[in-house]
Amino acid sequence: MPTARIRLVAAACVLLLPQLAFAAPNPANGRKLSQQFCAECHVVVPNGKAGWTDAPAFDAIANKPGTTAKFLRTFIQQPHMHMVNTGRPPGQAADIAAYILTLRTR
Image (tube, rainbow, N blue to C red; front, side, top):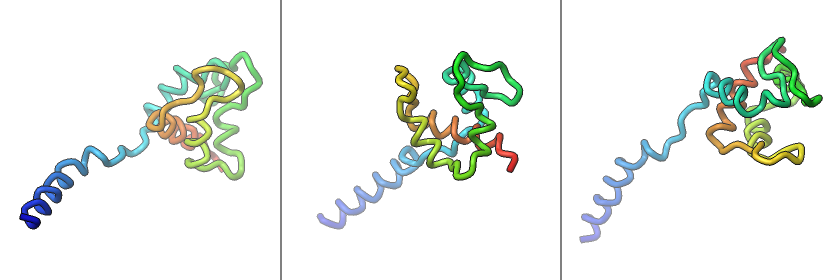
C-alpha cells in the first residue's frame, strides 16, 4: 500500500505542477495596467502626459541606479504615498515592473 500512495501523490504532483508554475511577467500587460492604475500620478510612457503629482516618471525610475525587478515588484505591491488602492497584487506588480524595465536606456 505505501507504494500505491507514493504513486498517487507523485501523479497528483505531476498534474498540479503546471498550475503552480508562475507565468513570466508580461510587459505589454504591465503597460496597460500602468496606464490604468499609475498614470494619475506618474508619467508611464516616455513623453507622456504628466500626472497631478510630482511622482517620478517611469523612465526615470527605470534608469535610476539600483532599480531591479525584485525591488520594483516589492514596491509596487505596497500601498504608497498614503493613497488607497495603490498596491497591486503580485502578478500585476510583476507585469508593471517588467514594463518599467523596458524603459531602461542605461
